Length: 270
Image 1 (spheres, rainbow, N blue to C red):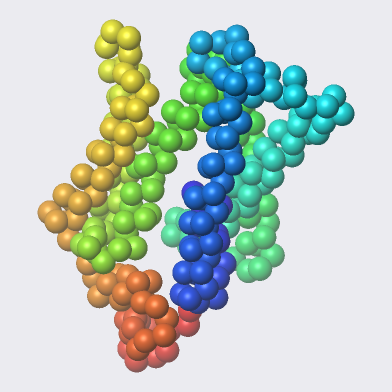
Image 2: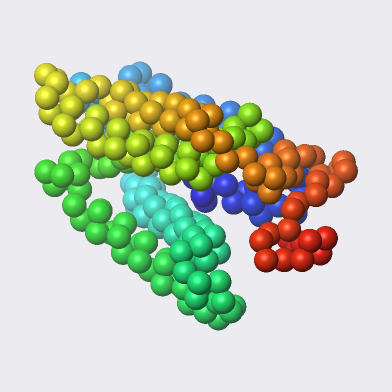
């Protein structure tokens, strides 16, 4: 996810990025234990009214916390949700303004500091507006409940998006270029739609959630690899960038070919 990728993008060199990765790995090893501990203990503390135990957290909050802390719990729901939405919106605005818009529009390449800031603000407002529009449709026939939106849509769509973004940084997948990325991403979304709607409706009992999430990921992964071998796009410039990403920053610098239109041998600014 882009807001989590910023912990690496905001570092000054490869060594700091590696330190950030190690710290993140340790925190993610410890945090699930803290997060799931109340759920593991809930059968010993409260008697759930639902068969799946989904009301355990609410019952423990109501029965075990002092009344004065109940308000803080509710406020925490809103504040943490708004903080995460803000983080996502800022990350998406930055990526769109600096990476996506200049590719789609020649005018965006000429944006100055003020124009880029205005574009980022507009992108932030639009993204948050779309998010709130989707939120208003929760419990509708299309989006169903909040668990469907959070788990099925986010987890199901994250795989096809993440495959080209992550594997494109690794040496073994250097043959896979823009064509492989677009095909794997697009067909992964098509697979998500097929599994969650036409196939889900035609299968008695529906398609299990684990297949709804994993099949689009598998389709995207296979196509990314296959298209890369059928139509390799490992240009010198892309290979040089991949080598640069995978270097530790302390060895010999990797020469990056000058982009088209620049004088050969001229220094390339980062």
